[in-house]
Every structure is written in structure tokens, then in C-alpha cells.
Image 1 (tube, helix red, strand yellow):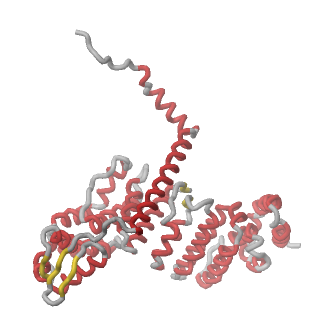
Image 2 (tube, helix red, strand yellow; image 1 turned 60 degrees about the horizontal axis):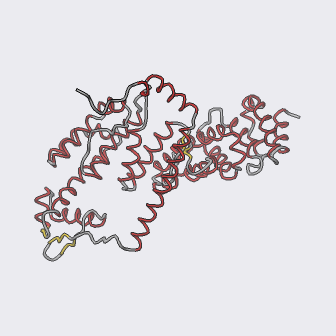
Image 3 (tube, one colour; image 1 turned 30 degrees about the horizontal axis):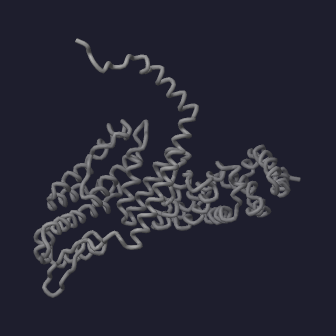
Length: 424
């Protein structure tokens, strides 16, 4: 019997109980070199294995089979093969070879990119995440890949499946950077700028010993989204931001900081001239669309200021005050702002007058009470989790050792206390 055939026979015979799987895993580890050296002829052997029964063995064969360079004409076959495996494999078996499963999934991502069909990778990658993660609180290295595929396929709402989970455990710091960056892009695509700011803020302020390119790109988008969402931007970093980010980030984002300065000054003509003069730079950063939204938002900010001064105003006056080209353009801006809930107003089509109204929300409806209750419950849950994490860190040997060293250097018990009174 051929050596590879023997491995197949062992997979078929040892994929039952947990004890057998442990033995099988040992056999497969010893057979890795054999499988890789025969990678080109493993295709027929994969047909003899059922991924829903022999998941661990199938994974080892699939990893070896896809380890060699894949030609473009083979990409479709490989994508179908890996997608079928992901959908039918057993979570308890693939978790025994966590790293191999991650590796196979990343090759799957690469091949759907080669085929320029990211939409084909979205559902299988989500399934892979749910099978490999221990809980919904765990951020795997596949999360960023899934979000990237969602962005490329413009399946923004699908990305919310993982973005709405509370994350407390991370495999690698880079995964968190990419997860928050891609998550921010998805929320930007959904026009949920508040959530986008939260995630981009996490990238910018995350601990880092060297400046990350991801943090630089996140900071650029953070500036733009701040202007769109808040109508302002502060260049001051929170005190918990790493020193390297505080020192270096602004040096890579000067053009964006200049844009923010011009935006705050409120001169629309000057802002548009600046954007036009730096169009190529914004385009090369893939931020031109966001920059255009920044320019559009300044008109909306100026209209919002009018609501604080006037109760009634004509569309013509709005157009002249805000520097819009026509009454029709002013009407479109006002209608869009009413639809987005940014202002409360009615438009009289006959005389072209806009009447600004108070916010109708009284915060006493059943829906609002339910929303507030859900928020309170979530905060209580997060508070309990934070307390548990604090207790866990307090008992961590590495933490205690570090604290002990610090106390040896600065033991304040050795110093005399300051006297309350001085006798003269």
C-alpha cells in the first residue's frame, strides 16, 4: 500500500472518538513532510475523505494540497473545494489544528481575490470565524479578512455580524488594528459615522511601540469622519495614546490637518480650492470620496446654524447665506437633512419657505424606554466583565512581578510622611 494511502486509511479509521483523534493528530503531524512532498497528487485522495466526518485529516491534506503555487486556472476549483470544506467541517476537529485552518482560510481569501470575486468569500469566511473562535468575545485573525471581503464586495451590512460583538480577547495586536480599521470603513459605507469614529479612534490610540501604517491611514480617515460627523476636529490626543503616535502621526497627515483647519474657518470657496489643488493626493489615499463628503457637510453645518437663529427662512435666503448655487440645491440639502434627522423642518412648496421645528422626541415612548433599558443592561454587563478582567490581571504572575520591580525602585513606605504642623 502506498504511504499516502496508509495515511488515508488511518484517517478513515481514527476520526471517531476524542481518544482516536488525539492519536490521529499525532500521525498527521508525523506525515506532514510526506503530504507536502506529494502535494500535486493529493487531489484524488481528498475525494476519498468526507470533510463532515474526517475534518482533521481532510484539513491536513487540504493544507498540503494548496501549499504549492496555485495557477489562475486552478483558482476556481480550489475556491470551491475550500468553501465546501469550511461549510461541512466539524469545529471540534479543526480546532485541534487551529493554525492550519487559519492558513487554509487565508489561501481561500487569496484565491477569491485572484478571481476578483470577493463576494464568493464572504459567507464561507463568516462560517470559518464562527467555527474556529472559542466565543463571540474572541477576535480571530480571520476577522479582518472577512471584513475586507465585505468591503470589496460592498456587503457592508453583512460585516455587522461580527462588528456588533463585544471583543475582549485578541490573538494578535495587528488583527485588532485591521479589525478596527476595516470596521471603521464598513460603518463609513453605512453612513454610521459615530460608530466609525469609535473604531478609528481605537486604532489611533492603541498601544504601539513603532508607528503602524494602519494607524496612519486610520488617522487620515478619523480626521475626515470627525469633520463630517461633528463639524470639528481636535488635534489633541488623549493622554492614553502611545508616545510614538503622539510624536509622529501628524507628520504623515499634514494635508488632512490643513483641510480640517480650512473647514473650521468656514470659507467654502477656499475649502473647495484646497481640495481641488490636492485632489491627486486624496485620490491616491483612496479618500477622495470622503473628502467630497466633508465639503458637502460644510453646507449642512451652515444650514444647521441657521436653525439656531431663524424660525422661518426662504430657500433663496438659505441658498445665498450658505453659498449654494440655486434654491433647488438648497431644497435638496434641506430635504436630505430632514431625512437623516439632522434638522426638523417643513418646506412650503408654494412660497418656498422653510419652517424650522423643535425636536419632536420627548424621550418617553415605549421604543425609547426599551432602548435606554438595553443600553443600561449592556453597561452593567460590560462593568462586570471589566471587574473580572481587572481581577484576572491582578493575579497574573507577570503583572505582579513587574509591579514588584517598580515597588522596589520606588517604595514610598520608606519615605517619612509629611507632618501636619510645623512648630516654630
